[in-house]
Structures are given as C-alpha cells and as structure tokens.
Image (tube, rainbow, N blue to C red):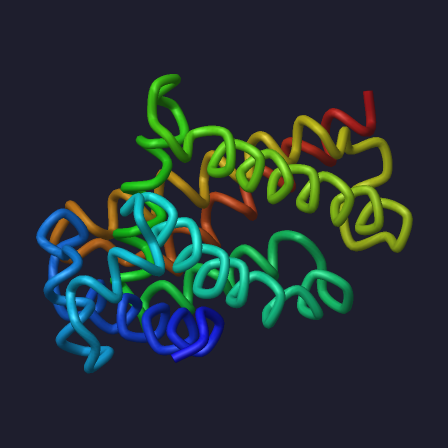
Amino acid sequence: MPDSDLRNRIIPAAIEAFRRSDFHAVGPAEVAALAEVSDAEVSDAYPVWDLLVVAVMNRWDNGDRKYLWPIAEQHGAAAYLRARLESGLADPALVRIRIATLSAASAPTHPAAGWFRTQYVRAFEDITLALVRDVVAGREPHGTSPRHAAEQLVALYEGLQLQSQLRDGSDLLAGWDRAVARMRAGWGAVALV
C-alpha cells in the first residue's frame, strides 16, 4: 500500500481511537486495529508516535478551525470561539486531545512542542485579526485593543473548556455568554476613557 494511502487509513483510525479512549491509553495497537492494518504498518508510516499525533491534530483540530472560521468572518471572534466550544461539546475527545497537546507545547523537550506551539500562536493571531475586523465592523466597541481582547477571549475559551472537562454540571455556553458580555462592557468602558 502506498504511504499516502496507508496514512489516509491510519489518521481517521487514530481519531476514532482517541474518541473511544483516553488520549494516554491510545497507542499503535489500538490505531492499527481500527485501521485494519498491522502494528508494524502504523510504526512504518509514523516511526515516532508524536508524528501521528501531529497528523491527527492537523486534520482534526485544524479541520474544525477551518470549518468554523466563516463564523468569525460573518459574526466575529467571540461567535467563532463560542462555535468552537459547541463543537467541543459535541466531540469531547477533541477537547481532551487539545488539552493534552497544550501540555506538550509547553514542554521544551517534547518532540512536537515546536509544531504545537506554532499552531497555538497561529490560532491566537487568527483571533487577534478577527477582533481587528470586529472593531472596524462595529461588532466590538471602538477603541477595543484587539491584542488584549484576544488574550481575554482565548483565556476564557481555554479555561471554560478545561472546567467543562473537570467540573460536573458546569454550563459551558452560559458561562461563555456571561463572561463575554462582561468583557464587552469592560472593553466599551475602556474605549470611552
């Protein structure tokens, strides 16, 4: 089987494996079984496990980002991040793997730290750019600092995702809506000064 065909079988199988089990419990054997290939074929296609995790995140998380990005273009950064939260509620395994890879991105010796960090920075810059457009379009108060607003929105997005994984009964979207409304009030007050 050509390498690209093999990888195109392995990546969706790995995504399914991560959906079925804890991130740290998935290995080449679980992926191979779902892809209907041998463990050796998984190891040949991805000789370093972290390369498979990168391929999974590139398809799964970046695919989710690209699919939902038109919301940022039409309705703004806050609406886009809210849609990502909704997507995470529908696919909690994606949230779990995002959280796991944030840890890897912060570890200087992790083999994929550079890639994970680059993806994180790119996503943050996307939110900053969306907020620039939001201010220009009047969706956010004039005078809002897009960089500072991005810091707040991304921190809220990440924090609420983590809480939704760890706290029973948390209402992720209601928490988001309340916090964004308060932040916007603050952005508007700063803009008036």
